[in-house]
Length: 77
Image (cartoon, rainbow, N blue to C red; front, side, top):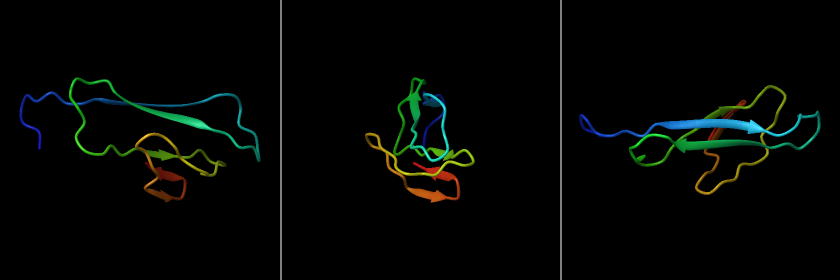
């Protein structure tokens, strides 16, 4: 547990893709998580992302990241 006056992390999440998605195509979008604060994170960081309607999850990759659960269009990384 953090104490009073302790410097905290501040996470920023960006989601982007290049080009237009087309029906039946294989496409990729990028989720970038950055600590823009002055404090370090403690333990694992969890990101929940809702896939846009019409998209299907295929895979996730990234150093230290994995898919921990999928519920409908919600992915938990």
